[in-house]
Length: 290
Length: 275
Image (tube, each protein chain N blue to C red):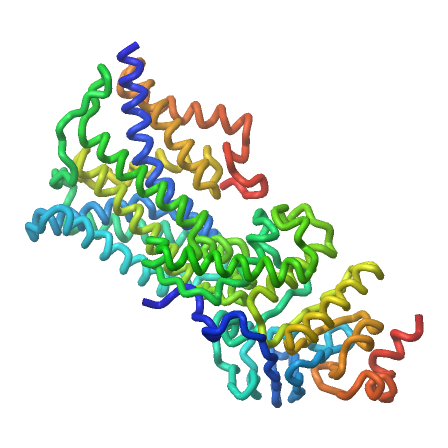
């Protein structure tokens, strides 16, 4: 029983970080209709920037963290202006291809600069393990989850209650009408990309500082695609719930069926759920599947 | 820090809104080989109801989209009051007092009546990225003040009180149109543009809408510019009518003058009166 509780808890906690990656994706899909295949690389680039600032330039981890978020935000802004805005009005597939192209460029650039080695960036959070009752939780895992939970909660509140958040939702729903109501839609789109880039960076840094930094980090986003499709591509809440479910399934299957099964079982579960609910758990019924 | 939403019109928020005149001068609009508007000029006088009429494809919606800022004219200017707004971006026209409704209802699905209407009041509040993330106390107070004003003035005025918390998706067509008008009014406009406000409505709904438009104009002093196919309604509520045909203004004047204008009868009213 203790074992089950431990696996479950670890799974849910790692699902929290996965939810952060999913949030980065859903923000952009909801806000601009773009399926962003570069989520994994944004995460990865953010984590490498953090490593460079913290280790190469020997800055304190918190400062390095803020710098990486700032640099990614600026890059997101430039990419939005120079690559994505000229493509607005083009078929969704064209924009999707552009994000795939950018992910290759980022991946290649990173491997050129840093090579394929695994680095260990400094942790942002204390590593002391925590006992929850009889269950032992590694400090980094708990800290990662806490940061992810705070950030996700903040975003949900931002979109639900703040004026800017509601303006972003209005822009996503109907840009033309939003503009006539006085909402600057170019600014809204830019802000969406900057926020999504920042969230991706946070996820990347959290994962890299607990699991090590290597080009394979971008692969973490793959599992998240399963979560997004499961949750419904346009639902923030769905992405979160699905990430937690996947995190839990992964951890339970790894715990009881051996480490390799974690790469298979979650996808089987997603497939089964999608047979019953083809639009995902919370997705809008009209969205198209890829 | 640039805000996402434009800054307010003026500090005295409860003061009576006064209409501004809207002047379109020599507007030429081309889409490739199509000459949508040719040297279109007219003026909507401050505080009056002006109607733009014309057969399908005459360029009415093009005129509206040019005034809203969706189209940049190839030549000519648009003035709001004394200010030239020809090159002002769409969202910045809202804070100058320009509001519009759409021919096809453009409400935000999934949001309630109240939320939709409140979005109209958005441009009158400051919001930078950081203040929005923090959601400060002064913003909360402004939000409350805005909400009260919107509720008191617009919702009561347009008799939407009983459905304020319903989702807009479940409302009948006539009510959706009225919610769209309410949202435009929540922008506290000085010029209100209505694109076919009674299209598809039955007699009773049309009369209700006509009454609301006249009330808005009389009590709020707003300039109203409307595009409409319902001739009866146009003639009843407008003080000034502009007739377009093939992208050109063929007649302007009072409803009575326009009604008897030979070119208008030929182009438009003749066909109307035939059935």
